Length: 236
Image (cartoon, rainbow, N blue to C red):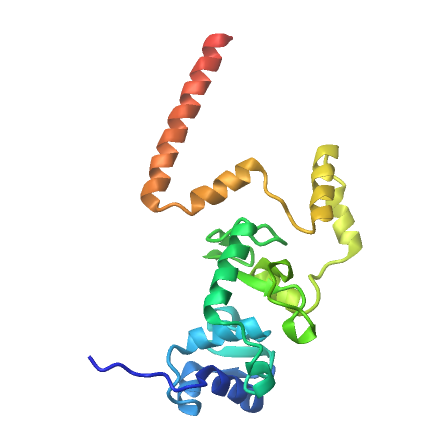
């Protein structure tokens, strides 16, 4: 089998083309990229790689037009000074895994877990990403304290500098909360993120199991609940 080799600097050439020819707000297709930047393998992956450098690209599923859209140009990675700032891939992968585990595989803003329905499209599943609190060009680092887990929707809102809504609309949501619920909310505010209850942590652990192990756990839990319910009836 003949193995194809990836031309050096493929991601850099792709980024330079997008910034100079497409520009922010412009749309493009994979076929267009293949013609303009030949020799780049797995273009969708290369586009995702740019997210670590502050780039924002909407997929055809998100634009619902069959084309990608360049929403935001991030670091000019093709320029030598920024090339030296790139995080080694292996280190980046380890850090991403550690941050996801630390945040219980949930968006720290909306609480959506990996594989759960996407809040913007319930027919799709949520995709989690690791974002920079302060971007590297703005003085941030790749230290875990500067990284957080966000779903794709919250990540886009975060990069645009806001989440939407008003203080009045948020206050309306507080009116029907009990004192206990308000206390929980205050704890989340103090922590700067939503913390999980034991039930939610158990749910996250369940979602990460294989389908076979999920079915086994469901049967064992159902049997335990049924037995506890029977013991309760006998005790009355």
